[in-house]
Amino acid sequence: MEQEYDIIVLGTGLKECILSGLMTLSGKKVLHIDKNPYYGGESASISPLEELYKKFKTPGPPKSMGRGKEWNVDLIPKFFLSTGQMVKILLHTEVTRYLDFKVVEGSYVYKGGKVHKVPASEKDADASDLMGMFDKRRFKKLLLFALNFDIRNPRTHHDVDPHKTTTRELFHRYDLGLDVIEFIGHAIALHNSESYLDRPCVETISRIRLYCDSLSCRNTSPYLYPLYGLGEIPQGFARLNAEHGGTFLLNRAVDEIVMDSGKVKAVKSEGKLFHCKQLICDPSYVPNRVRKVGRVVRAICLLNHPVKHTHDTSSCQIIIPQTQLNRKSDIYISVVSFAHNVASDGMYIATVSTTAETSNPEKEVQPGLELLEPIVHKFVSVSNLLVPNEDGKKSQIFVSRSYDGTNHFETECEDIKDMYQRLTGTELSFAGSRHHVQPDAGHLHD
Image (cartoon, rainbow, N blue to C red; front, side):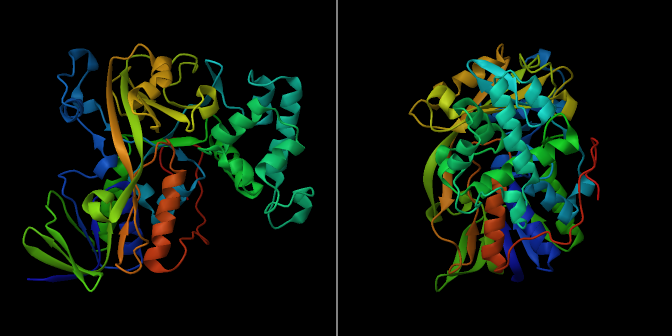
């Protein structure tokens, strides 16, 4: 018996689930197949804790870690900006019905061996020990300019051509020092390389605004994280799909992808043929259609204390800008805890991640690990950064990129939007979506 689908999705990673949810909502008949018995692909949440020790082939956990089932450890933790793309997608698809979010308590940047709060308001700037008095004034002026900037209203541009003036030139106009430029570029605009300085400043202005708008919803930090971890999201999309007639087959081997004159025709799984017009998958299902462009190192650390110099917050993000360590890539630290229902009472999970630049990736995350001491246990993984070889328009096979070393969702959303456009020929837009986020922990509301 052969079955016909519009789209088959291989893998239940976050991006695959979001795209299949969007397709189901637009009336497509979707089949999801995953070779794993669990949701989430490489971005899964591992629970109970015993499974994490097993995955990394380590004896444990010790009794001091509390009850194993109280833990949900994300293999690739990433935070959401509260007015960012990812939240817009969740609100647009109404998957927020199945999720509870809680604000992340702090946003920090590393400078000169110390952790400092990221200033993103006038009040923060006045209290900040990252800048001297004159720098504070200049920083506040730039902040004001970015917050009042409206691309459609040239009066707000103050003689800056947003498409011609580079970010470097914009910073120069405000006479900002290198230290200030560093935390604006990396901890507020969340750029992960220095190339942004020579691109048009419109991109950085909108990123500064996004950060500040997200912060104004929440006050402690611009970031949100789901209770019980990111594994809740693929499951939320699975429920959405089921409601709209989508089918899920977990724990099923994929034998082959059947092609017909260079175009996808069907997927053969456990001897059965499932026909489709388009295929969405993560790189692990099509090793011959992807190439390696780098590596990411992640160290998941279990702690029994809050991170030093973060005002005892139960969750936070810390960014170590590349120039602090003479690197090409920033180091990211995400900290979540029992407060997000992902660990036993009094316990914390901190993950240090970065793009590997040497043949000894574990040594590269050492500066991040030092900030977390003492560490009860750490699990280090190095994974390849894979990207598709082609855009999929000819083969109709659309492959997602591997998750990068950042610990927020902005770059992953670019990939989702890009794939959506190639799949459908139209841009993913939320125009007419009147959703916004209420400033309380719990559901994201309309």
